[in-house]
Image (cartoon, rainbow, N blue to C red; front, side, top):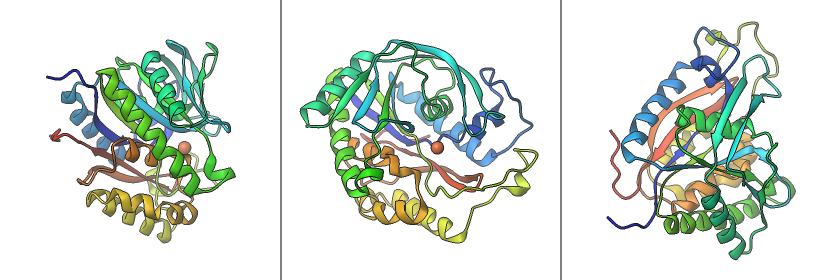
Length: 299
Ligand SMILES: [Fe+2]
């Protein structure tokens, strides 16, 4: 076996805090009765497929760590604190205790800098890790027994365009792949975003009341289905091509760059993704999906 590192899987791993709330893990203070089973059971199957690949590190890009000058990387070996969702403090008050693979983060940072990107290591030990990173990593690996590399979203969709964002995220993906290969490690990539992102503006009394949960409107649903069909067909370059329209029309959380970064890092898979689940959370469209290169079979 060669000691070249590789990406053993990439996952579209959305981060609605509702899914953690509904799972009732010991780290989260609020408790629920149930809810969003389709997505949670989809995550169960993703975890079952990741386990035999023996990953050594999770590399996640989150749209909720927003840095407007370049991509930043967690650069401290461990973080421990309480994460409270600013919009849903009633659902998510999560005690996290995580380890960071700082050498790999530094290597991706350096490779990205070599490619001409603006990057920075985040070395404040009191930094509060964003809930997108925490939720996606929890749902992919609730034991927290692997170190993570956490990458911020640099928001170029907002101040330039989707096209500029994608150019930069594809470059960051290439840098990510090079650094992982040089690391000798088996890495799982997590793109932490939902698809369509129009959401409800009022809440019910019971968050897990599934009689209220549905897509926000049919146009959003059609976009989600189109993106999922492209994923199933292995047409990832077409996903990149339609991304500007998708983001603008579906107000997609892919605007943060996570999905483009992951597909770029995996050199645009031409094989189909495993679709574990599709479901809405407060009306937003979420898919849990996995891409397995190098003949890594799913269960
Ligand atoms: Fe989000």
